[in-house]
Image 1 (tube, helix red, strand yellow):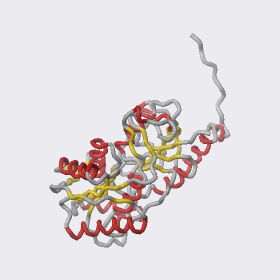
Image 2 (cartoon, one colour):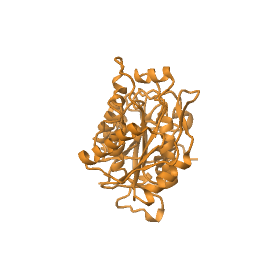
Image 3 (tube, helix red, strand yellow):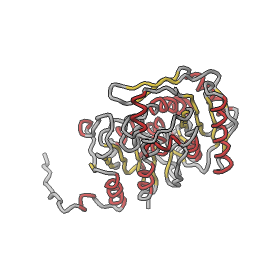
Image 4 (cartoon, helix red, strand yellow):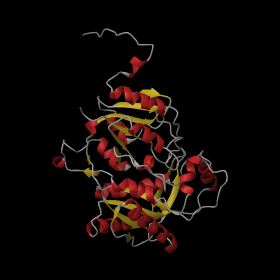
Length: 354
């Protein structure tokens, strides 16, 4: 019997009610992973700062790589373990850098992860944060060439098979935006800039990558939302990034290198689960062209964008909650039309032959 493969997408930086905070979509991913054979998702879903959860059948795929996979350009090749290269922004203060090195050493000693020697960029990356009129967050890198030069050293000299980037982010954020986020009702102000960093490396080197921002800890907040709390546990968000990258599938870019026996291809995907108002991602638009792939949209997971499936001509199974989405997956995997579980089944209609 062939493997049932699902993708869970919650775009970053758009204020998703679930998945817009510090790893708060992990429970959704854990539940979905139990009812499919293979789950493909991305760092925004699985990264919980110092918190993470190992799911052997779940594949950690950066957003740009996920788009290329869904378009049929790249395949995914599962691995047992990647050797991770650690890339530091020159703009990180020595004490803060040391905290991250200690986190990396802890991951090696406690979790058995494999890391190369690290590299420091030859210039500060100068990350700047922005927000759009829609409320989504994004950002820019002042020295992208420095980022790419450092990544190249890790790949060519240290043999890195995946890259974790630690960039210095501004300590002074928009006060209202930051406070709303910590209260669990706003947009993650750094998520868009994080995506820019990882996209650049994956696009250039076709290698797994994820980002961990460097901050000094903020003052304690006694009204902190549980959804934001994972980011308040210490100096670093690095552990979940390293765990994710340690088993992130490698990208297979050349079509002649693809192997049907072990590699995962876009035409293997059976279902995609997305927020109902965030249907504009490249991955979803590509997969919606497949007759075989079922699109499941979740109404409860509201976002700051309003891109619904209907205007895009995307047919979807509409559900209210992720609990319902899990039930739909169970039915689909069992070969049951979900509508058969409803008391109201519409009759068949005759097609007209011209």
